[in-house]
Length: 257
Image 1 (cartoon, helix red, strand yellow):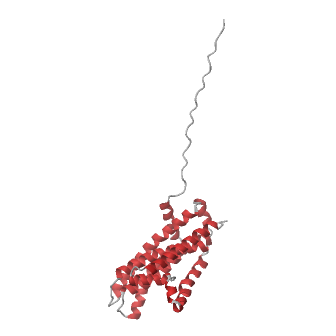
Image 2 (cartoon, rainbow, N blue to C red):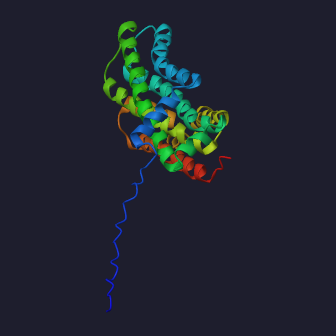
Image 3 (tube, rainbow, N blue to C red):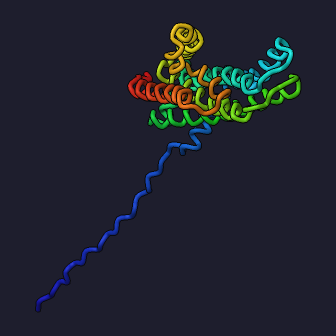
């Protein structure tokens, strides 16, 4: 009598899907908002932002006291817009170079290792802050002109307002690029202001045609007074591109240790 043994059947094991990997980094809008909050969280950042808003109306008041009236709004707003843009340049520098100066950049790149993404968020944050602060500043300047200055000529004032707002955003981005490239707030601002307020005006007295193609501050005044023109737009755009590219290239190679 023989017994037969049934063959053992293998039980199929179905693998359970593992947890789906999730991106831990913040989204770009969230990162941009974070950079805006960081820029306004320091005393220096808030002071520069306040100065950007107040320099326009204060400048108008001083001009009114010395001139006594008969002001062309486009010219006045162009000069005030140049001052606003130069202040916003410092805000941009602080947003990038300030992190290297105070060594907080280590924490920033630990949370978001993609340096290009961080710099893009900083540029976007500075553009937004520049738009908002220059809008408020030029609005107060216009109100001050209307309230305290007699004999104002309002011809081309609208184009001057647009030029001031756009220039404020551009200069904030320029500052962010320069700050990222230099990596030191004091050195970046000293070198930039020395170039824009010292070297280029001297060049303008010697070679005005060359200076007109290099001077971003003069380009702001030209845009405000004469409207959209190829040369001043190209000058400001060139500074934006050059500063941003320099900031990205240097930051990618700089050690954070």
